[in-house]
Length: 233
Image (cartoon, rainbow, N blue to C red):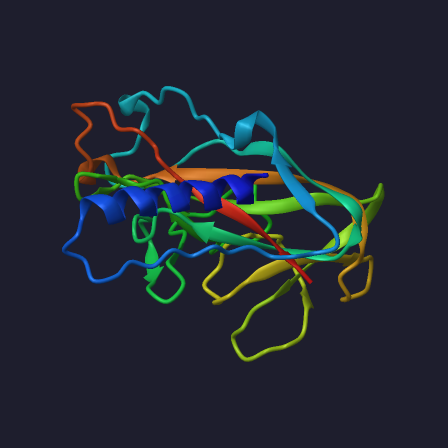
């Protein structure tokens, strides 16, 4: 239904533009989608929002990064038949994360450890910009995963010269490897499983930039955005 509505809106927009802009020689209208025998719906608790509420400026460090508490969301995928899928994260705030930045993937490496994550040097993406200043960044890890009620391992794949799935030790959604995808395998294996219902926890941890680099005389809004996209295998 959402794909049909999107195509309808694109068509209506094209009609209006064509009738009001005669100077253009041509305009493209794309109608896209994927035909698949099975459809899956991803869901996040809390409307997909991680809310850090009001953060008092005097609790932040002037010359160092301030790590915020770990937050968790319930994540599920419900399919109308057994199928295999992978998960890919798309960063909606490219170039806004403080830390060592990878221009190819748009991911930074956190300059501070996350107590709630398994490994150090996690991949992070930005919380947006305040003027030209980088507000902070956050990392995401997927943990405690079950497929049809059975515990499974997270596995990952990148297009950095490898065609094989490998086990994901930390479950971090972002790192500097390009084209990264996640899936799930039976314990001790590296082959994506078919399932109807997957459930997991998404752990999110953020840090705020040094306040010496921010204008804390006015409110600053955290504005991170990640899109989780399903890929049918």
